[in-house]
Image (cartoon, helix red, strand yellow):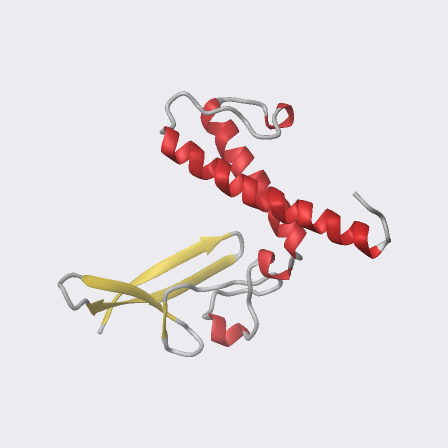
Length: 141
């Protein structure tokens, strides 16, 4: 059952996309996009670099997140930077001054500890990468 249209205007792009609502088991409805090329429901429409329109993932073939092409160490660096940026923006700190920033004033202690634990897991990934690299070159740390 088609329920409406969504018009997207970005720069030179002007594209109409059909919206479709499906009933949920316990009431309400779930909204989906309808891919303009494959005429199938999709939760997400993609427009990869170089594309001129939005379409579902199946239309584009292989579409992935940037982190899926990164190595383990780069994902750990990105994760740490994301945590650091979030904490610094909440607390009004400078990201360049802190390895791991102090707890922002209004952040719950439990949330801060979870962020610290995740940051430390990323740190252990990076440390294991250093040990593996040192072992590869015959160095002892």
